Length: 432
Image 1 (cartoon, helix red, strand yellow):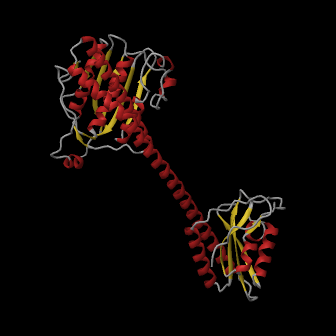
Image 2 (tube, one colour; image 1 turned 30 degrees about the horizontal axis):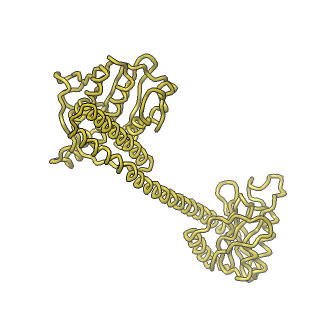
Image 3 (cartoon, helix red, strand yellow; image 1 turned 135 degrees about the vertical axis):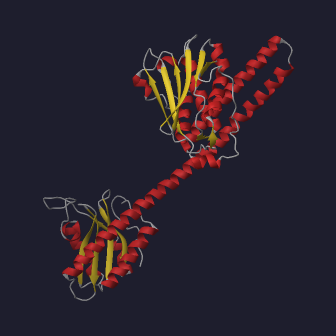
C-alpha cells in the first residue's frame, strides 16, 4: 500500500496537495481497518484541491500498481447541476456525475464488480471523496453505506487536523530558521558596532585622566560623552531587536520599588538640573515588593523620566509617583510639557516613531518608549499615556506585585542594583 506519485499532466502544471507522513499513515491505517471490517477488497481516498480544481489520490488499499498513474489525478468538471459545485453533494461522492463515472470506471478497471462512493465532507462543501469496491458482485447494504459515510466523515476530520498540524509545524520551522538567521546577524552586529565604540570609550577615558591642558581635556571628555551616547543607542537598538525576536530575557527577583524609584530619580537629577527643571518624587513610606528584573525595571523608569525631561520646557516640573492598585504597582511620570495630540498617542510606543514637530530638533532613534513597552509587557504589565495638547503628559505603567511564594523564593537574595538615593527630605515627597 502506498500513496500515488505526482501524475503526468499534458496541460499546465497542477500543484499537488500537501502530502506528509502523518496524514498518509493515518489514512492508510484507517482504510486497512475499514476494508477488513466490511469485507471489501479495494479502497481509495481522493483529496480535492480547489486551487487546481482536481481530485488527487492521497491513499489507497489494494489498487493495482499499474493503475496508480492513471488514477492519480481526476479533474473536476464544472457541475451541470443548477445548484453548482460546492453547494452540496452532487452525484455519488459529491463532485458531480462526470467525476462519479470516472471513479466507477477506474474501480472496474481495478477489478471491482460492486462499489460505492461517499463524500469526504466537512461542512457543506465536499473536500474529497472515498470509493470502496469488492471483487465479487455482493452489493453494499444500506447499513454498510451508512457506516462508510460515518467513517468518511471521521477520516476527513482527522486528515484535516493532521494537515493543519503539519502546515503549522512547517511554518514554525521556517520561523525558527528565520529567527536563527536574525540572531546570528545580531551577534555579528554587536561585535561590529560595540568593539570600536568600546575602544573609543576606553581611550578617551584614559586621556581624560591624564591630560592637563584644559582645551584637550574638554575635547577628550566630549569624545567620551559622544561614544557613551552612541553605546547607549546601540544597546537600545539591540534590545528592541531582541524583543521583536522574542530573545529578550528577564532575571527576576523580589524587588523593593522604593530604592529603585529613588535611585532612578537620583540618576536623572544632573540632567534635570542642567535644564533648570524640578523633579519631585512622591512616594509612600513603603511599597510591597514586585517580582521583576531590577535593572530592566530601572531602565523603564529612567526612560520615562528622561523622556519627560526632553519634552518639558526649561523651568518645568516633572513628578514621579507610585501606588498600589489591585495587586499591581502603578508608577506614573507626569510633566507639564506641551502635551501630545490624541491622534498621535496610539503610535507613541512604536519603534522609531517621532512626532512631526520633534523630528528636526531632538536626537535619538525614538526607541525609548518602544523598549519600555516591551520590558513592561515582559513583566506581564502594561503601559499607557494620558495627555492632551497644552496640558502636559502622564506616562504610567503597571507590574504585578510579588506573591508569597515568590517572596519565599527570594529569601536571602538582594537585587543586584538596589540602592537608596537621597532625593527628598520628606517621606512623602521631595525634589531633585
